[in-house]
Image (cartoon, rainbow, N blue to C red; front, side):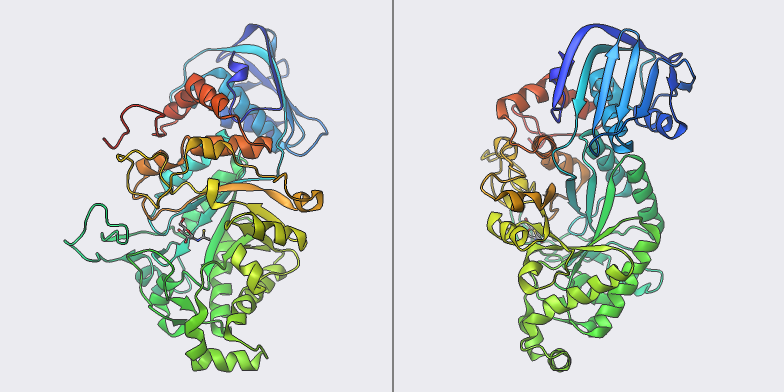
Length: 503
Ligand code: TNX
């Protein structure tokens, strides 16, 4: 029974008769590096013992693959690598029941017997969280890292900067911490609950570099790579509040959303500043990738800025618009010199803001992702439909204010991370997929849970298996077990029916 309620669905799972009793006296056998993973992810203090009935070991296989075997004599965990071992333990937790997701654990477990053989279809299984439009506390971020790991996801794309707040401490440029991280009230006293343009309330926050180090290390322990994004040269108004001389358009921490005028000038002084800020981040975060943004940049004002036009002439470009790609390539070269790969939103692919090994993250539909793949770039797919979770989940009038929509659970299930309409070569360029949680209309962590789950669980299933999930089957697994797991983990998901938490 429990074996057909796993989420994401494994490749193969079969129950057999009986249970294994897992208790405080059960010993754990294996390499210390692996037993540590088992103890940490289970949250149980199993003691190392050469005769232990829970065993964990590595065995050659496809990346991240694992086998989990439960008999009345014991539990065997076999992973091709540490990631595989982690996935096996997450699957084991789901088999143990929702209590495995509570902070306070029962003394003894009856684990149903059976076997799971599994591996992911794609290497990149991610979630993007926007912490600029509304700040998420470190506590919330750590909770989401746990939730992602429970869904056998492995990337946390941290959208750390945008017009509405720069969320990274700088020790070198403390004026950023003072000027770029908080916004004042806008239109105070003049807001309607349904106003879709303004949030209006004062808001702010940022992560210290120590916070980022902690988040990154916490995630690594759980098999999640944190990918920082500094969104540039557009969406940069907040940074410009500290460096108005480096921008065109409005230099302030914005209190409203959209594609705004405050953008960084594509000149050497901007490149220098950004490289220094990235270096501060790379001191504390262990990541092979840095996302440089590149989306929604209206370069119009560059054409009338003498400094930008002089620089355009100096580098021999024919239009100021081309400096968008130039800027991203400059910062990308700095990353390359440090052995890091740049990631960009798909607009940058069109402006030439890519180096040979740049990863293109595609959000504006299929065609541009297909074109980037055909041009030989690795792509990560997160198309607005159905991978954006900032849209309504139904047409009910009681849904909270959102960007629009709806994108319902059935849509999330339909996500085709490896599009059948692409050629085999193009599909081979797809590193994987992710869902994106933009936070214009997500003011707190309760609301974040409501928007992210259960749609995020359905997307995690479709990304893990590499194929759309059957909606009825997802509903069966949600109601049969997964909602109880989320609840135990402290996640206030949106119920499928009945009163919504907002009513
Ligand atoms: C587009 S997706 C954006 C974000 C918004 C989002 C709202 C992307 C790269 N840029 O700035 O928050 O739409 O759905």
